Image 1 (cartoon, one colour):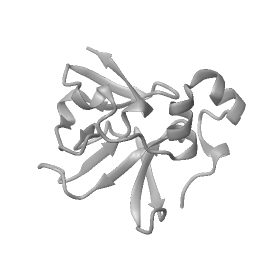
Image 2 (cartoon, helix red, strand yellow; image 1 turned 120 degrees about the vertical axis):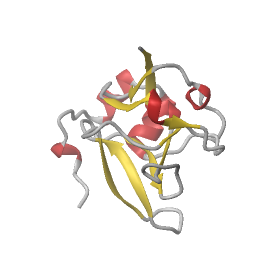
Image 3 (cartoon, helix red, strand yellow; image 1 turned 180 degrees about the horizontal axis):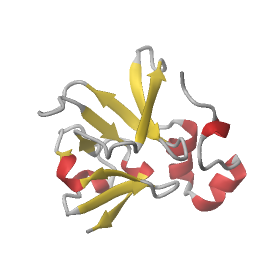
Image 4 (cartoon, one colour; image 1 turned 90 degrees about the horizontal axis):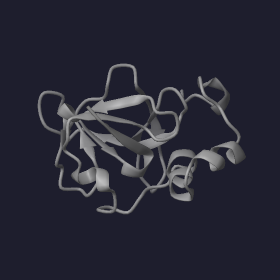
Length: 135
């Protein structure tokens, strides 16, 4: 079962989120929007470092797990243990597994079972929902 907003470590009202997020970040992280494919600079970011939640800066993925999926969104094959949670998303006439930040509940993207070894998973993330912190 998906958590409700009040069950996360970090909770804010929409107005409080709007004070710290850009309108585009708010739409993706708080309203479950999706950025257009190929628009995120993080899709082409392959430096050493961590990808953190743009809402609460929780580390989500390390650069060693990033790969070029060819989809136009930053993709990873494994999150940092304990960083994310998932729920079922039945929007857009299909059933997908939604990925969100464990600490603030921000919508990050979706996970699919067509990724590379060793996990076979592709965490297809909205780049605008994250920040890159170089090592």
